[in-house]
Amino acid sequence: MKTVNHDFEDSTNSPVPQVEQPQHHQWKKPLSYLGLILAGAGVTFISLRLLPHSQPLPPALQPFLDATATQPSANLAIDRNPNFITNVVREVGSAVVRIDSTRTIKNPAAGILDDPLIQQFFGYKLPQVPSQEIERGIGSGFIIDPHGEILTNAHVVNGADTVSVTLKDGRTFKGKVMGIDPVTDVAVVRIKADNLPTVKLGNSNELQPGAWAIAIGNPLGLNNTVTHGIISAIGRSSSQVGMPNERVDYIQTDAPINPGNSGGPLLNASGQVIGINTAIIENTEGLGFAVPINTAKKIAAQLIATGKVNHPYLGIQMIALTPEVKQQINDDPNSPISVEQSQGVLVVKVARKSPANKGGIRAGDVIVKVNNQPIDNTEQLQQAVENTPDGGNLQVQVLRNGQTLNLNLQPKVLPANNK
Image (tube, rainbow, N blue to C red; front, side, top):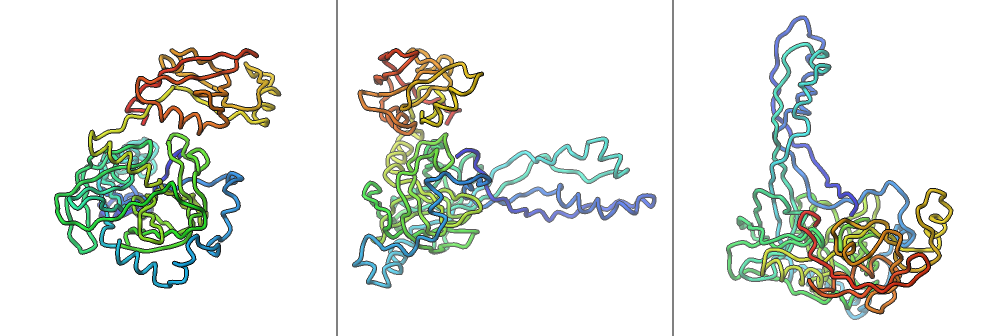
């Protein structure tokens, strides 16, 4: 998502030592305030990815700022049953868990009091600031196997030193992270338990806008909170949502989702999980996003089997070539290229020693076909790469300086530090 921002809640209450210095009485109160801000050894965060919204939304998302909960459901029979949400919660609620995690981070305030200007300002010994802080996170998850396998978001447990899982009945277990996949924001956690309640997994490929959507999770630490709305849209690309480094076609919902809901299930009216709640756009209402459960199932199977997921890549930076982009490039006197084509994907940069570089792709090329299928946007190209097995061939047709070239590329596994 572009940069993901978590909500942080300062839980620092450490006492600040008071030092008697008569000649500096006027600075005691400012020093106390500074110490309270800087001297904490613990920080609490509540897990949900907040997508910054400092600029106008993409045109495709703008209409959904208006309330959409009055749209008709795709299942009129269920609409006539006022208790269908209660039935879903009764059936699924016990399989939804709370996930608490801790990780040690560097204190960003450490060393600030060593600044000579700060020391000169206060004029005497300043409180000690710990070099590390304990970050505590709260997220959600749901049990997919009676022996303790739990699906959640990668960002809920990524980098965690400890993970604990609390069931609806109050039991708490130590969790082990079986694997995470930042590219799809999916993770699997396992606890040692048997005969656990489980959810039913649905088919996210059958979703239609307007169908009911029910979310269960732990927003702001309030366990097993239920909200509902509709499916606002399907197939929202990562770039549309603001997460260009990920490879997910998100479900969009207006069901209220809040910090702490991350990793919890998005359910249909029959109580089947259709997605994993993962993000909201900051300072907006009715714009929540979930990873489709079909994507999550495929990733989870690999994480359980091997602890990792291999994603193929080409090693290029690209943008969809629209008439507007074409005009901007051709009107720029400093542009190193000129573009005649108005359809396809423009290669902006090629990484050294990457599969694209080895296969002959150059910056300024316009990719128009992959495996004989027309390419209109970056998502189509990304999906074609994702569907290519390691060592497989990708037939790419490009336009370069008015000539058509057919290239044979072999995508490789995305390095772990790029995931």
